Image (cartoon, rainbow, N blue to C red; front, side, top):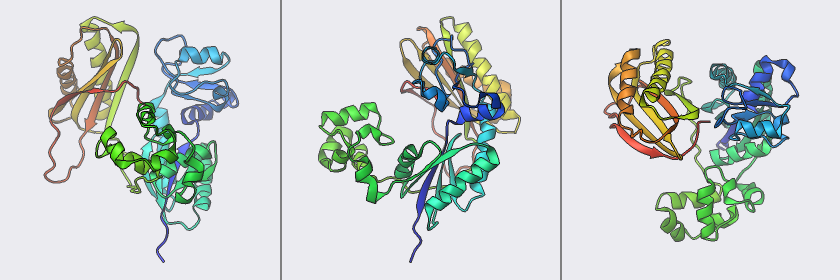
Length: 365
């Protein structure tokens, strides 16, 4: 008989805050908020992570720091420290790779694992114990037959637990929940579904397929119903820990209106990224610029460089060339720069053409 394949989703609990507490043990048990420069008086800076002690006061990710300070005046506010979080994440992923599983890194603080272990709960317990022993960080593990089930199961496992969600338990656990409870269905999609009188997961699972195709198209419509049934991707692929790109962005307390100031900020971001790439010898092949103007319009434009390069000035020049595509007549609220690194490509694969496209408002995780 063929072994059953399980998908596990490992999610580090309150990751950024937990890393900060590890290096500042005196903060253990205190409400900790991580975000921006750690200054709650700054405008337009939001919470990246709040410790469970801070969450008890209603503080959550994406909340402006100023509001977090009002809800929890005794909180300790700390600045983001990406290099430290990357190092902590790398240690965790190394632990996971030492287990009898296939590991697909999904972010700083989460990964999907595939295993044919006969007892996935026992494996999950071993994973949690190993991560804690080797890194001092706690994690929750969701178990399912696919990524959707495993990802949602982690929400029930938190904090510091294990939960299994499968085809057999899907309807009982998820059926009465709103469609927005499904990973991948946001508020706007949930609103459009509600307009079709589809409000719960159970209703989505039996929705008329023709109606969904008419409303959402031939690709998204069927995928939505499949999600309502608890179906999802099962592929878990081991990927290199080397990032495909790096990005930096800054939200300004005071909008920028002078083009020279905007260019100076973009050049600064580009030089930081180019210098980081040059260190380990990661050649840059493509650059992108993100601009958010008042009131909340965000645009992204990118271009492929003439040749892969480590030259800082060439990368900066490419970024400035992209910036010239933007109409900077409105005050600028946010600027971002991304560099894409050279990757081995299948033979015959062509590089995408330069493009400019609008993006939805939102920040990086």
